[in-house]
Each structure stands twice: as structure tokens, then as C-alpha cells.
Image (tube, rainbow, N blue to C red):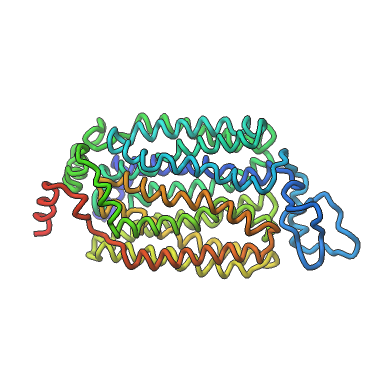
Length: 499
């Protein structure tokens, strides 16, 4: 009972957990701004422009990718249950005639900006503190989100430019948070605190997918614009909370108890507080544990960005869900992912606390985070719309299993170099942003007709990328602080602790 009371106190009455909860909602809103276009575009674009060509016709053998639902089927063709289900959404008609070839570019535009501020964001957070750098970045993203409806009604190229700006502002989020946790997360609480705060990204998927489907139908200002206005307003409220309650380190926080401040500082040591040391860029480039994180991050993001940006399209193309169903079933995989991420994060630190080597925990978690989703994605690719709930179940399981990565490579940056946590995440996320730029375009090229067979190729590629990442990370990852990440004093401290 006493242990339970202590745990409950830490979770609900300490500032480090308070910052984790604030970070959770910040990640949620950042992902809402990232994803709002992915589902919004489904109801923004006219169906007739989503057909690959005007000569696509309905046959008994094939069902086109994007159907003009106002067309009456030709004689002798019987509508099956799948086609009938999507016709329930026929009263929703988009506004814009944007070519499908450029829709992938619009979905990718965010990442062209996002990649720019990864490394600078980490360096600035280390140099000037994470608090204000993150505040300024997300202020830019919120402004861009507010302007998106105006941009859409002006020009699709204006939308692309605005999405680049939103990406530029959002790019500082992860590097700043990693730098913040380098100062706030005790060694054996890293996984649970980082997993809790970063699970907000999953919550962002859930709420954005679920709510956007209904806002498309029932929202104000024509439906889809309300998606962007609501996420922008929520972001402004969160920024005010962040500015008032979050500080760069325990020593700067005016309200933290002396006991908690001393506990965090004594546990972490003062090495991360030194900002004058030169950044060992060459050591970064030759560190195999860091390269293993980069590879894992890239492979993970290829799979995740494929699902995040294209899952609503798959739900409509292959599984034939209507708009409201689309939002609901696109969000369900991330509900289980959120629960699993928090639970498995707690378990990972329990294993480390019981003497299991950190590198073993990281490798096992990451291996499972790659291999299990690969298996379930391949299985889902064989399921057609007549058994679409089976496909939803397989996708839910695949995405839930991928949540193990938060206890794998995601927190591994802080294991190998807590001093440079923000910079390292900026480096790895720079490389890992490339799939966000390429995956939607690749999916658009591979699924020109939206058939199950075309989407099967998409899932095969995701599975192959995941398997490669699992093998590489299992061979080269490490869980110990690297020698290039320590200074003279921290080396002596670690040596004394080991004795």
C-alpha cells in the first residue's frame, strides 16, 4: 500500500509528471495540425476529380479507386454490399477540383518544412532552452493552420506553401521535448515519462481522425474549414499553458518542491546542464548506435507516415467506409496504440529497474515493434471489403504493436547521449522526415486505381522496410552512454557510481 501511494503521488503530484501531461497534449495538438489535411482532403475535393481518368467504368470485375457516386450503374450491373455502403455518403460533395497527382504533393508539403527545423531546433533548444524555441515554433504552426481554409479557397499552391510553413514551425517539437527531458527525466523514469508525453501523438491521430469525419459533415463554414479552425484555437490555448507552467530545468522552476528538484538533479547529474561544450558532430557521424537509431527511425516513419496520411484513403478505396465511418475506423487503431504505448513504457522501466540491461530492453521492444506490424499488415492486405471488419482488426493490431517503438529507439537517444538528446533527435528525425515527403507520393503512384491489389503492394513495401529496420537495429543498437557524450567530470561520476 505504501508503494502504491508513492507511485500515485509521483504520477499526479510531481512537476515532472505535470510536464509529461502538458507535453502529451502538446504532441496531440501538433499531430492534429499535421493530420488535419489528410482526412480533410477526402471531403474537400470533388469526387469526379479523384478519378484517375474519365474512361473508368463500372464492371463486375473491377471497382474504380474513386467513384463518381452520382452516376447510375449501367444495366446488368448489381451493386454489391461494399458499393452500397459508400453510397450512404453521396450527399457529401467536395468543393475543389484538385488533380490527384498533386494531392500527394499537398500531403507531403508539411514534411518539406518539417525537415528544415529538426537539427536547428535541437541546437537552439540546447543553446537557449527548449521552452521559448518550442513556443515560437508552434505559434507559427498555429498561424498557418488558421490560414489553411483561406489558402484552399485561393489556390492549391497557396495550400502547399502554408503546409510548408506549418511544418517549419512544428519541426522544433520533438528536438525541444527531447532536450527538455534530458533535464527533467531521472534515468530509470526516462521511458515512462517520454512514452507518456509522446503518446499524445497517438491521441492526436485518434481525435483528428474521429472528429474530422464528423466535422466534414456537420462542421461550420462549410464543414471542412472547421477542422483547421478548431485545431488552431486549441493550439493557442495550449501555448498559453506551456508558457506559464513549463520551465527548461528543475532548477529554474519556481514552484517545484526542494525534494523533487534535488531528486531529479542528483539522479541526472549536472553534465546535461553544461551548454558551453562543443558539439562533437564528427563523433555523431561515426557512432554506430546513433546510426542504428537513424535507421530504425527512418524505417518506422515510413510505415507510420504511410498509414497516417493514407489510411483514410485506404478505408474509402478498399474497405468502402463512408465519411463518418472513415473517421471512426481510421482512429480505432490509434486507440489501442495509445493504451499499449503507456503500459509498455511503464513495463520497460520496470524491467530495467529489475536489472535487465537497457540495451536488451531497447532491442527486444524495437524488434517486436517492427516484426509484429509487418505480419499483420501483410495479413490485412489479403482482406477485401466484404470482410472489412477483419481488415480493421488486423490494422488495429498492427498499429498497436508499433507502439512498442516508444520504449525502443525513441528514448534510446537519451540512453546514449542525454547531454545531446535534443540535437540527436533532430538529426535522426531529419532523416526520418524523408519518408513523410515520399510515402504519400509513392502511395499515390502505386494506387492509381485504388484496388486492393495495388494497396497490397503498399503494405508489402511497409513490411519489407520494417523487417530491415528490425535486423539493423538489433545488430548495432546500444543502451549505454557513449564516451563522446561525457565530459571529464561526468566520466568520474559514472566511474564512482559503477564502483
